[in-house]
Length: 220
Image 1: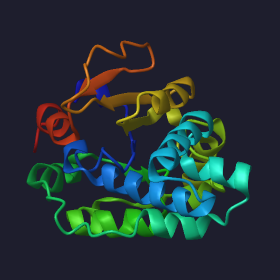
Image 2: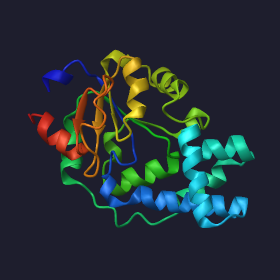
Image 3: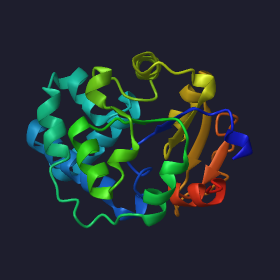
Image 4: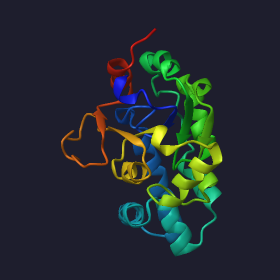
């Protein structure tokens, strides 16, 4: 833990971070989003999928694109996108056990809605480890990596970013964190080259959260 001994605030993304990418949860989210776009714009699922990804690349989230381009009501989209069964998502005993050994404030900072963050962390058996959740609605639907939600989460929970560590599966979201002074950890998963993003804003890397916890924390 020597490299993290100055940290007193731990900031976690949710999707593909607090659960592994290989669970396929985000694939389900994407399918739900595609269905919504197809129904909204009266296009084929194939075209809707292309539009969904274009909005995600351009605006940071599909939701932001739909709000700006089509003036949709965000809560209806978020409810639809996350309306699926998560009972088959496996719990991780390592994560459940080791999170308690991170001393300091723990925050979930996610582009997902609060309802989903609450439901998923309760299902994973880790909700009690976290002091706060900062969801997309708390950011007025402005997603990471825009600077605005980072400043908002820092102000709301009153922490020094120079004493904070942020965990993410999307390395681009770590750029803003690093620019603000945070220590960063990128989870690259099984199917990404860990050397693909050898950028100065990626300070540490691991395949997944349980690996980082197991290799970093010395239990008392």
